[in-house]
Length: 523
Image (cartoon, rainbow, N blue to C red; front, side, top):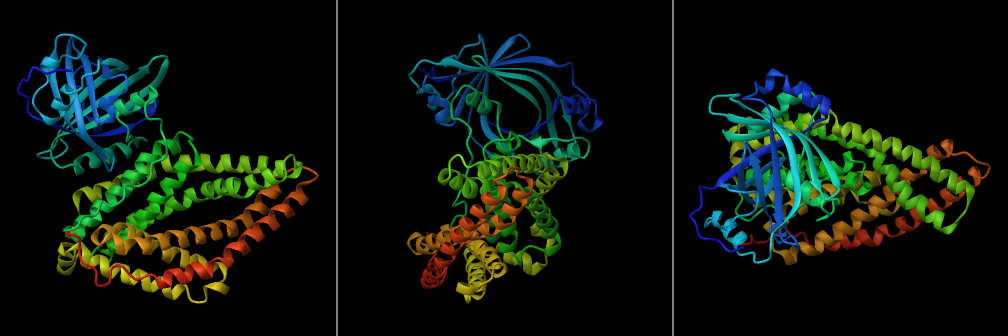
């Protein structure tokens, strides 16, 4: 797509937060004064997204859109963007076009536009977005201007369709925290949830490009030279991004791994708030820790049943195909699992949970912890992250060594406490790993991963004992007692086998040199 080399318009940095709502809530909020009065009647918007046949633009992190507004077309290039704690941030270049087809003469000399111009393959339409948009401007505080857009319509890719029903809050002036504060005001009036996906992202998925899949956390976000405060915020935002990326999959009833990743994100956030004590004032941290704990616990039963079905029942059904008692167990477990997952979706998507997560995002955006503590806390936050990391890792390591004494004969309750302590050390090692030489970090992290997986499996099999009884009470059939005995003996054998593997794994951990001792910061 050759460019005529026009000078580019100034870079527009789009910063917006999207709230997904039901059609009923959409209409209710349109009439709610908390979001102001419409600037005019709703107007139709038709957007066409173009790309090469192999989607070279999208794979390079860019999007090319032609939008018809009020009888004229606007050509838009978007790119170099990210979703940070639910807020979409990206560069955007807009130019008026003569028709609804890409015009290379409208490309400027910005880096993004030059990359679009360098594409030589023909551009073709990929999908279309058709919405009715109603806009209004809000001034919620001095120096803050937010454009609110009510969008309702659909995305079309061939014969595939997806509904659009969302409220966009775009920051025109003011701090990013203003978006969270307005979203919290909306949640106080009606149910809504953060929508981490852009219309472009949803459109490409609808067109079969990049099928949705569970997302793992982005690692190594802490960098050498960061202060403790900067490292804390970077790590916390990465955890929130991880959660929000997997939330749509959970709420849509997707595969069990979505729920697992959401729980991992929640546990990491809780661990993070512990890891960065004492700089964080307890009174400021406590509400967030309590909220995260409540959501994590509420999602636990669904995860336990998912694991039970996949790792206890499934292998037995393979060993005894056609066994009517095990089949009855499978049906009963399936019903319990479906019920638990419905509860998990309801709890994660409800107003209380979404508001709790927004409050945490707001707290992170405003960096309120810098003002909540004492002068000593302020100095601690300003100190190099590596100094804090070494102290935290040493404290977590000592706790693990203490709780692991006599591991061979430890009761389940003690093993559970060890697993929690090990998880905190593992998460802390993950947060702070980039501050230390990779060669020193790798042996400890690999050993922690292996031991954590072993303890997690032991915990799952210990929980399976109760789940076998609970599912057995729901199973029906003459062979149900026999099936229960088969499952119990199988589970006990696996548990014993894993218990025997504990001592060697523990010795390996004890032999690992703490990478935070006498290590130099990466320059």
